[in-house]
Length: 208
Ligand SMILES: [Zn+2]
Image 1 (cartoon, helix red, strand yellow):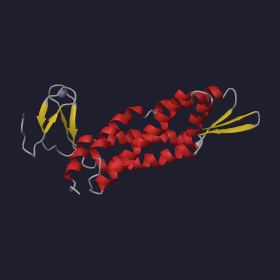
Image 2 (tube, rainbow, N blue to C red):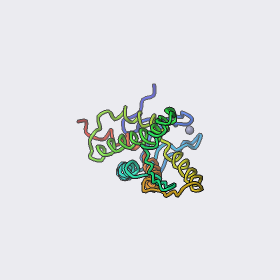
Image 3 (cartoon, rainbow, N blue to C red):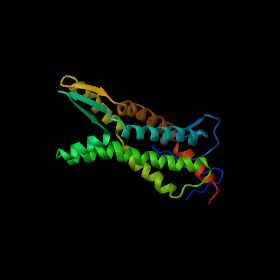
Image 4 (spheres, helix red, strand yellow):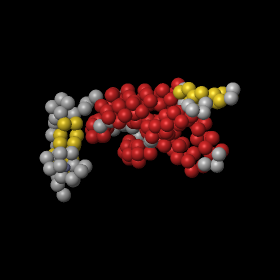
């Protein structure tokens, strides 16, 4: 077993498993694997604050997505609204339970869980406190992330919007615009999230 001094912990390349000793980076610098070129870690001391700002904004926008209609439809004098939850419910009532479950999982449950976990972890780290269940929640985050598919759903909604426009008067609702903002904010949050730095800050927090 290889031992390393506590101020120079070991880090393995995610892509090729080559082991390195961590060294301090210049501001904004990044360390790359000399064998395969993969990114090992970056110097991003403000990543908790940046990621928290994006994910708390995303959580607020997510509430808007679920409050306001995505589409408003008017045909033969009948006016109908379609919210995200209403879409999943209608699919269920139309005997398409597996599709309804998939829509609910990928557009409601997974993003809600991802944003809640992120906000909880980052908020406590920002307050210099160790979040209870940190390791388990970081692993859960890795499991949940691939199931969030809000952008796939948005493309589906846009295609439906174009097709329905021939049959009825269709208006994009506030929920749809919020959906666009949610995708941008979630991408920004994921881009600012640097697991290596998050773990480092967690280990530096006082143990209480
Ligand atoms: Zn490598």
